[in-house]
Amino acid sequence: MAESPEIPEAKDPFERRVALTIAIIAIFLSFVANLGDNAKTDAIIKTNEASNQWGYFQAKGIKEQMSAMHADLVGRMSGAITAGANSTEVERLRTEVARYEGEKGEIKAKAELLQVEATHQSSINDRCDQSALLLQIAVVICSVSILAQSHKFWWAGMVLGAAGIAVGATAFFL
Image (cartoon, rainbow, N blue to C red):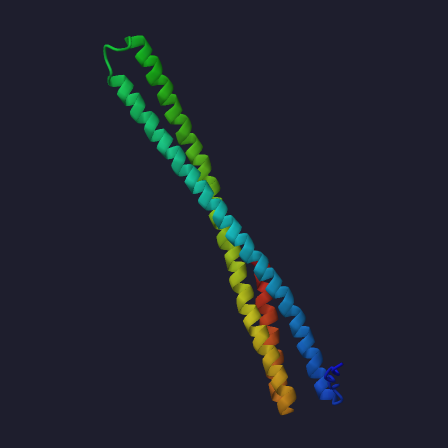
């Protein structure tokens, strides 16, 4: 059986501090990535629901137009149906047209609300992506600080990590 490679321990206090910094940054990165993924999924769902509502709106518009044309056609007909029956049918069709118009207003309002929600979720995802990028770069720079034994790289990584955390925190306030 092959021996597993031995993982070196950080014996130097500097390496331990950097390793702890990397671990903390990675924890924040996982939270930000999770929030961004959830926001992206919500944005996709809301966009799909808005598209469905716009399709429904369009269908109601077609039905409204067909009822209006039918009412116009029945109103123009003569001879085949008595005048009283014509006016009753025309009135029924016009009532239907008004009903479709009212339903379209409700559907339009719902579709627009869903679009606003999708845009909001997309903004959260964008902010989380920016945060994740800063946090990933911070992890790389902190890792380089161990190799280079450079406190300057470590501080640069911590500054980028703090910036990434700050940008990620703003996603909660959007």
